[in-house]
Image (tube, rainbow, N blue to C red):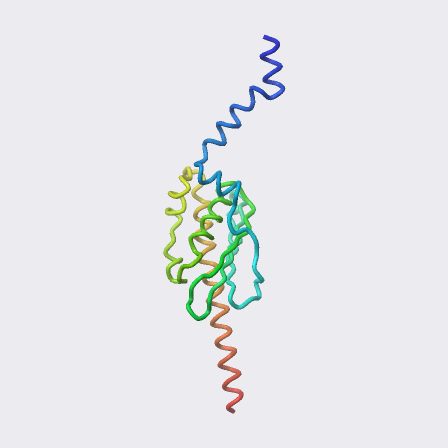
Length: 164
């Protein structure tokens, strides 16, 4: 009996619950958490980069997702993220960057949190993580479009000033 109690105190008996907790997440969540894709940051002042910064005050998750857009084709050529949060938030960010790469700007706006949640098999208590990813995609596109329209206005103003 003493040996059983000692083994539990030392940790042999505590390994099983930890392993069981890890299995509660789908293997895709674990994979994207252990091997996140596209972690990093682009220069936010680059006119071809759109940045979406979103957070969930209730849980403390913060997600920054950036897209790099080919201005001629409107296609997203690269994406990256930095996320402070739980494994589900990191996995949702990682999946989002993979899904937006190579797609047109208009197409990525159709990515829904339910698709991300279904792909990762997120439990109901973690659905807010996929919602953050959807919001980050939309915010990045909005930021890029705002930069682009501001750049077009500046170019038009310079052209008007040159002809005057």
